[in-house]
Amino acid sequence: MGNRLSKIYTRTGDDGTTGLGDGSRTDKDGLRVAAYGTTDELNSVLGVLMTNSLPEEVMQVLHEVQHHLFDLGGELCIPGHQAIMQTHIDWLEESLDHFNEELPPLKDFILPGGSPAAAQCHVARTVCRRAERLVVSLKRIEDVPPFSMKYLNRLSDLLFVVARVLAREDGGSEVLWQKDRPTVSFKS
Image 1: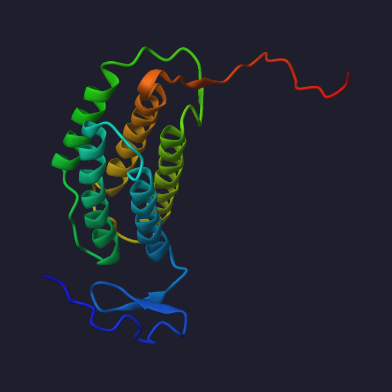
Image 2: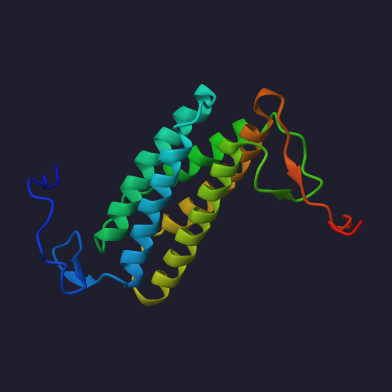
């Protein structure tokens, strides 16, 4: 079990550095900190999404994802540590297939929206993509465990599918992008 925080402020970060899980210190704006910080942000965005009334299966999957993201954040915070495995990727793919099974095939691009929960899920998806991009950047300069990027890539796919499910909940609909739409005009 990790350290328990009995005192929340330590003043050790007042110089613009933060401690990594291995005890070393690094700049707060470094890529490693940005990657695990964005993973934490994603976890928080999912927490907001989960305050909605969601289907039980969706809630269970998102709750499990939150645990995975906490593990992934730890993995990114501790150089050389690996917490995300192929089994996590397999589970995401099974969840993706399960939710996608009932959806109609995509023929058009989907705009974020459809319902408050679907829109929040799209926000989570875009934060997930940002976390993925940061892990890609980090991998260019430091070692990153092998499944971090793959997990985030697959998770963003799952969040897209879950957003589609949520947009259709209770008779709602998805907002489709229209290439040749009329422009809004305020002229009479």
